[in-house]
Amino acid sequence: LKAAVYNMPLATAVASSWENYVNLPAEFNVMLFWWVPDSTFLRLQPRRVTFPEYDLDAWAQGDRRSAAKDISVDKHVSQDLNALAPEVEEFMNRFQVSLKAVNDMMLNQMDTNDDDFDVA
Image (cartoon, rainbow, N blue to C red; front, side):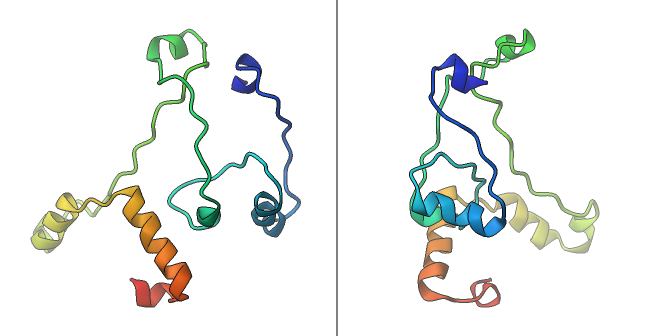
């Protein structure tokens, strides 16, 4: 565990329910696991714990002190989309959005209480 290697004093726990999982970080100063994009802890503005950049050679030798390899978030479409809707495929190929922009949109939705259908 990186916590031991980097002398990080912490204890692990598992929330007894989704409700507790969501409420505990708002009530206590705790480290939490979160995936993005997701609005669950967005208002808490959690910060990422960072480790040295991913080291392929070290990982190949079992040394996991560096960060894990980044995971790509990819777009997948039907293999015949180009034949069925070439404009849509072109749009999907060119479409890019930053995580900051997605977070801003989610915060806006939370502030306005708009439902998912209206936002989409």
